[in-house]
Length: 516
Image 1 (cartoon, helix red, strand yellow):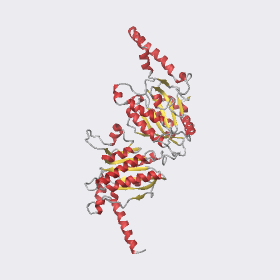
Image 2 (tube, helix red, strand yellow):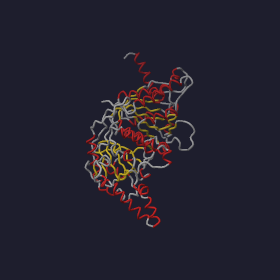
Image 3 (cartoon, one colour):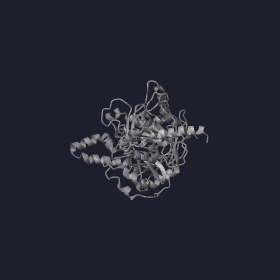
Image 4 (spheres, helix red, strand yellow):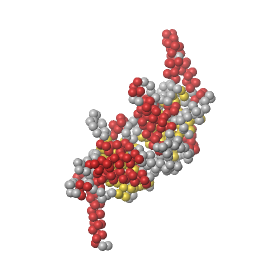
C-alpha cells in the first residue's frame, strides 16, 4: 500500500475516533448521569447487531472548518444511517445531545432531511430520535439551517402515508423542530427525560412533559420509563407495519387457536344496561394470546385504540369503552380515532371496530368544542377507507355512532352483532321523555311515574333490539349476522381472511390516486 493512501486512512480513522468521542468525556458523563443513552448507544439498542451503516460521518459545523468554532462538532450533532431491525431495512437518525446540547446545526438538519428523502425513495421506514435544545441559529449562517428545517418538514409530509414514520423524544425537543415528531405516524416519549415544547410561556409545572402530552395534548402515543423501553416499543410498533404503502402488512406464525371460543365473553357485559364494563376484557379474550398493544392509553380513554393479531394477521382495533364516559364520542376521541384509522388505511392494515356507545354528547359544552366538526372528520375518514374493515356491535348503537363506528352502509366488509345490540336514532330513555311526556306528567301526578316510564322504555328497547329489528330490516341498517358472543374471535378471523386480498379503490381524485 502506498504511503499516500496511509495518510488518507489515518485521516479517516481520526474522524471516526472523534465521532466516537462525541461531545467529549464530560458531555458523555453528563448524558449518562441524566439517565440517558448516548445517540450511538440508542441506535445500537434499536437495530440488529452489526447492521448499522453510518452516513454523513464527515460532516461538521462549517464554522469549525473556518476556525470560527472552538467546540468540536462531530457529525454536526446528528448520527444517522441505514440498518435493519428484525431483519427489515430501515433508516435511522439520532440527535446527539452531547454535541452543543443537541442544538440543530446547519448541516445536521440537511443530513436529516436527506435521510428522510432516501428512506422515501427506497421505501423503508424512517425512525428519528430527538434529544436537543432547538436550532443552532447563528447570525452568519442561520438561514441555511432554517431552509434545511423547511426541507426536513416538507419531506416528512411528502412521504407521510408512503413509509412508516416513528419518532422518539428522549430528551428536549423544542422550537420549530417540535413539529417533526408530531408529524410522524407514532410518537414515543421517555416520561422521565422527554420534553416537547414549541415555545412561549409554560403556565403549569407539567407543561411539555411526556404525561402532559399523553393526557392533555394527545400528541404522544406511547410512554416509556427509560430509553431502552422506548426503543423496544419502536421495534414492537414496526412488527405491525409493512415496509411501505405498497407492501402487505407482515403476518406471523400463529400460536393461538383460530377457532377458540371464549365462554368468559358471556359474563363480561352486565345484565343491567345502566352498568358499565371495561372493553379491554373483551379485547383480551379475542386477540391472539391475549396480547393487545394499546396506543394513547391515557388520552380520551372512552375510545380504545391499538394493535393486535388474529391468527397471525395484524389489525388495528378501535373500540368504544363504556367504562369511561359511557363510551361517548367527543372531540378528543374523534381526533384519536381519525389519526389511527388514517394510518391503518395508508398501510392497508385491517381495522376492527367494536361499538357500544351512546354516540355524540348533546349540549352547549360539546357544541362549543366543535363536536360536529370532529364527528364529520371521522365520517369523512371512514367513508374513504379501503383497507379490510370488520365491525362488531356489542350493545348500544345510538345516533351518529351507527355510521361513525363502521356500522350501517358506511362500507365495512362485515358487520356482526351480539344479540344484545340495540339500534336507535338516540337513546331510548330520551325518546320516552320526548314522545310520552304527557303520559309521564300524568303518572307523576298519580304517583306511578317509574312504573309508566319503565313500561314505555321496555316497549321501545324491544323494538330497537337487533333480534326484532333484524326481522324488518336488512343489513343496510342492522348487521350482516347476529352471532353468539363466544364466536367473536373465529368470526373476525374468517372475515379478515375473506377481505385480506380485496381490491377496493377510492373514487379517483386529482390529489389522491393510489398506485395500481
